[in-house]
Length: 455
Image 1: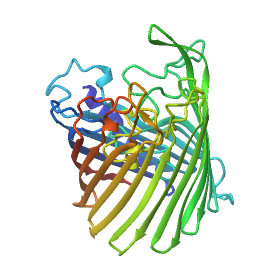
Image 2: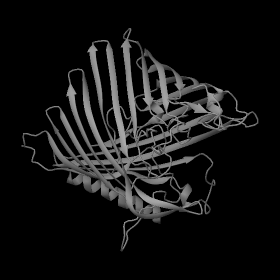
Image 3: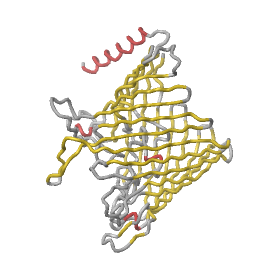
Image 4: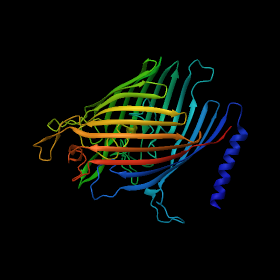
């Protein structure tokens, strides 16, 4: 009875929108089913000889509804993320809320602040739960590789005119409606909050993004402040206090095509203020890459990323480990996710030397092969602080094959292997005693993403 009522309500909503659709309005319904089977034998962190490889299949299911009319847009995306076998095969009365993968991924409305006759291309306000996707997704990205993705609850003021872009975003998080106070528990129960999936969710965030389209590229500036609720420890547990610690991230990004077959990108960012634990912060990131098109089907290019870390010999109490905010680390620091994701790797920072290659065999078949050399940005010390270890972390190779069966159905397969050093397994980095020095990971992903209805 309940399902029938919900079906009637949803059908009535869609029918009502269709009936009220004028010449300027559009309704679209899209869906997605994405399954990914993974074989993990040292993915994220090194395995021990006695550990058995893991194998599982995860699934993302999304239903998205968009509606646009005169000077407004509405968009809702509901998704369910879970592992096959997580629930009982019939009635399930035992799954905890923390394991419930059904949630609202996006739910926003946007409306134009100026009439369509204005000389400005766009001045609008977008409010609600939404993805943030800027430049190369290094600091602000939707993290689409993860089945659950990444989204933010915020208000976004957008100004776009004659190749210029100015976006001002503001977010303020609370755990619930309150009668008094604004203390925020940045680690809600059942939710893996945090910067890069680790630690504490921000209490508030404000950012200004300025972008300019160039001939053959684009350039941008980012000014971002995220605030973390203060706390102190009592018997090892966090007790939240009034007030926040503020972190400031500023920097620039540029992408250019100086030659018809050469694309170059570069970025530089600095972080100041205090980190999410209240420690003084002085960190930075530098990145540069190039991609050369050898033939219409084959391209290759080198790159390097430098993210600062902490010198073990420093005694000034300053945190110099750069945090790449709310981006898509899987895209940059190796597909095995050893760095800047859920598994930590110490505080020494990272230098990532890489060579990427792409080959398009057919219109619907492509290959990608990347090689990474990972090195600590600072000295790594032995547990007794008496010996300086080799800075080399290891070498990773990533192979991805992408095949489009149709415009709606896509298959992607990947294999990665990591040849680790003793330093990577050391207590100062991954802290895995007697670790296997070669790690492997493979996956097969099927993505079905149709447009169900549009009018």
